[in-house]
Length: 343
Length: 183
Image 1 (cartoon, rainbow over the protein chains, first blue to last red):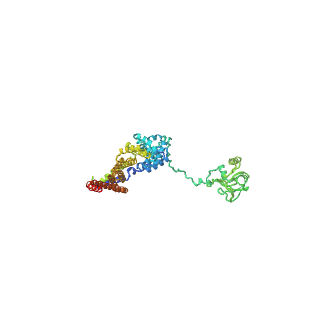
Image 2 (cartoon, each protein chain N blue to C red):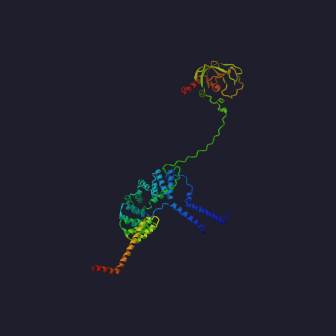
Image 3 (spheres, chains in turn brown, red):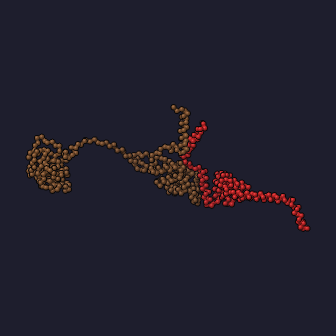
């Protein structure tokens, strides 16, 4: 429990800390966290920052630093006339007469009407620069208007301070901004990405050898190294020929439509299904009726034109053997023509 | 309020004053202060251009506004001295020495001016004072000269007084030999 005496001591200590802070220049305003960068009336963060530092130096009577900062501000934004007043005031206080002269020259260029109100500044500057004969008319004029123009420069510096403290107006989309253009809508937050849920695709659907997708001439043409019109000339007999143990058919190519000119005698695995996993139809038994008629002509599509044991594999099994009638051969010729002969 | 709490209150007031000063650094000068600054510049210009009449007018105006400004009295005295006007210059030197008695140059220059004018008593007074100040050693020679002059003057006065007292007793003794020569 805090006694009344202790509370008094605590209060006294707190007040003394505040007092010491005031002595060393750390006022509550200085302790406050600086506002985030704001372009103010200058339209640029760097210019606004330099101008605020200059204003701070001016208020703390650090005129030499203020003069340098205002000179920097003029270099960054020369069209802001009020900076010349800041430079003029701080340079006069710091006794930097060459800078005062430069500021007066700048004002004569940027704000010619102000020259009539700056007679004392002209006269004083020329006096300090040893240009007495030039100073005299200005000083006499200043003496005549001392009640009118005495506070001209101070008021200009106060206006500059006020402008420096001013924050930029809030930009409202759709209205005219400070640069004269319509303020655009701020970019919207992109919608949070949600991973779409998709059906899980099994291996049997991805592996082209395990499904019946792509059963057309376009795919057959693209994926075959060799295509030709062949004549059927029987098959090699062997034991246990069945649905899953196809015989080797003997073909003789008559016309090569795509690929290298292979040997005319072409052994081909005579598969009875188009992809793996096809179940054998009920009651299916191998017999000569399952084979083509001798001397009949067929379109043969071979994906890999490399002979292997028991003959070439055909494109998708039995789909790689198409009857070489006028329609089928015509379709293949149409595809070749569409590829401009690049087969 | 106890004695211990007085410094705290003083610190608080001082901090408030300091805060107020920093917030209002740019105070426009009063018309009177501005006029004074302009006349000050005019004075510098007239001095640089050698316009004596205007310079004197400006000195008078400035000293009328601030009569206790010792440097202006001193500079005005220098100006008058260069113009050959010793009496007013001495008066201005004396005013400078009066308003700023701690400056050895103000005091010493007043002494030298009186010395040149033959006022050795006042000169010795000012030079003696200046000589004793820090930085016033350069007036030691003038002070010594002044003391010698004063001594000579005192000797001369004593000799004059002695000469005035002598004729009454010596007149009879000196007249007789003349007669003797004639004899």
